[in-house]
Length: 374
Image 1: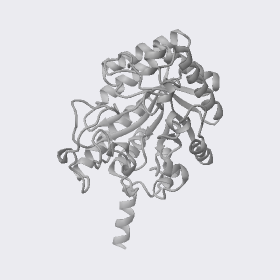
Image 2: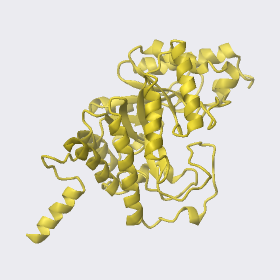
Image 3: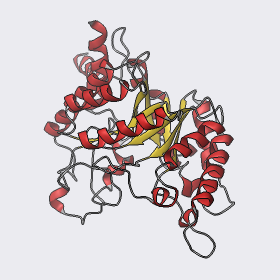
Image 4: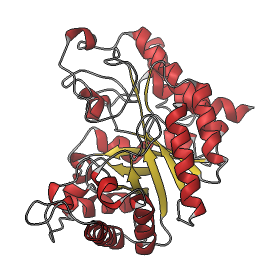
């Protein structure tokens, strides 16, 4: 009897046994506050991930695609679209009655080279690239009109100093490529939510650049609904105060805020500052991969406290924050295992490699239940 009581107590601590006061899932805990989402990969879309799929169905009410809707996936060659995985993704979301996000329409990464060049390998003219952009957005957004509720229209258009990134979109079209992308997406589905998505917006220079960009779009009547904060965070960045100030700054513009790609890196820093810039690549170094045999309890607790601090900020801004999406389901799924140092063993999410809830999961649940008692 004593052993059975101890086992039940352990399950309750992990948030797996229902009680009248303690929700057992993320989506139940934050019901009425904001959506709780996760990014899903091809195995999960197909139903082949026997560990991850039950967690997706039980814990989340929104999904984002890791790669299924990126240009190289759905439009790999001129005139050729491949919607098989994207169709399955949308069907997965509809089957489970989820809020479905489209990620991403215009980005400087994962775009085939042909998009920017003619058949002689010369860079396109402005008008020609605008036509390709419009055709792509009309085809992709139009196909899922009324089924995908929100689109990340433009992704990572800013440098760390807040200036516009000198991507080929910018160099060929000019700075109004952002405006045009939003206009084309709105034409394709006037009811869809449209988001500008970027990382490190908690840093003041980049945030200032994003604020200026949003104001410019608004002044020109561009239909932008929300700003996506990627929140690829660390154990010591951003502070709760930085997160609070960032959400407040964008909410003051009259746009909603979505936390679009949340995870918390627990490994030693590999550079001078946190970043999600995919062009970075660092040689593998054992000193940067200290937890190959498991995460120490002390680090788990630090991570749990960080998640709790951030969710307190998100909860403070319920009404302005409409969705919080974890970028992956379990630690084993996370891109953080390979960025910016390939092959590391990272632990950035709420569920471990076996699909079991970590202390961070319980901490996130407690934030809402504690708030509900006040």
